[in-house]
Image (tube, rainbow over all chains, first blue to last red; front, side, top):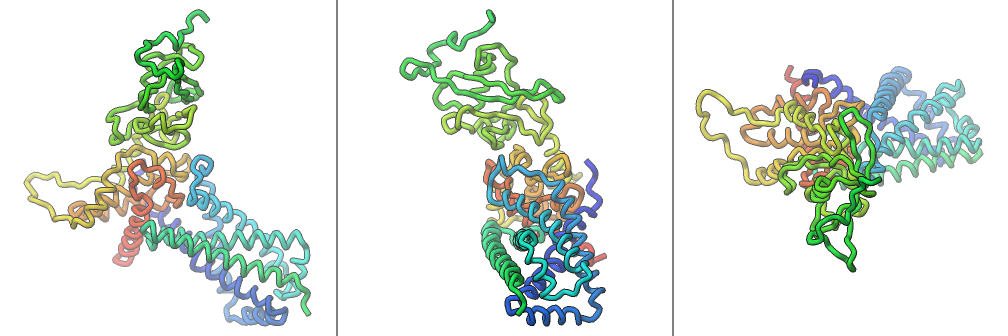
Length: 206
Length: 268
């Protein structure tokens, strides 16, 4: 056994959980909020998108507060998913299943985000209601978005649960149990908000 | 097949008859002839006696080492010592769950009883494993209280009764290895020391004298294979035969390590 003198793995792991909640998680909430504007019609969404476009130093903020933490969380997360063992067949308990779902939804979200960015942010088209409407009019793309939205919101909500354990916030069994109810309600709400916006984009702009 | 020994050749006084028929306990045991040998399954049928546990089944096989079909086999190798679930040495995977063979009562188990060694540890032979890595982990986290010296240090500080009560629960850990076996993050791709070691670090950090070496244990938990390798699958707490609140210990140590790490960094 190697003598415990290097704390780098510990720091990388803690940064991973922190990055998932603070910049990436907060961005997810903001993104779901903006998308929900679509439920108020094309004009409302376009106005919200224009507001974001008007943020000063937008590219700087986008790069350092979204892309850098997102890539770090995603790539390190794949390493975590790869080094984990999977034994829910032998031990089919609730938290063990959630442990696997967390890794599975992480991988789904990783693939989803790459495709999602490629077809929207890096597509060269302006981020308008019409652009998204064109995309989700394809049923395959719509279902892909739906799976991705549900996976991302699950990963975020359940991730808050493990964040609270990793940082020593929820210590006792009761606190952890209450937190798992809270985060599952959060998942249902966020997934609902995301899917609702997705459906709103399928209606033609009128 | 002239050498075939028969089950019926045994003394009738030991046998339990049910409608004049001897009842048998059916076992499926994973065998392995040596550390690098190939594992294989073998089936056994041992005469049933009331109140049998898995140990007494294995002893029956040792008395009459024949498989289900009466063919002579090498007796199954296993370890045992206390026979009252306090030494931990007879831990094996029984019907899919890591537990002690001594407290695994035949009457409460589904048959055929499936018995395997704990594969997280190197198998020496059959059901006998080398749990040395657990001792190494305890050494890593300094799970002891250093009081040796050249003169009498006198009595140490007292421990509040309230804390002693929960600390006692943690002290019931007997390094059986069930939590290490059930943990998905203890595998070939990680160097995780295992749930029990984190709980033991908490026990000795709570002790008023042990607290004096608190920082050393927290530094160890932040080291390679430390607390950050835990993925919160929480199988450990489910399989612990002593009902030790391992997940609470892990979260409590996460809190200590968080404060320690931030404090150490800000003080530099």
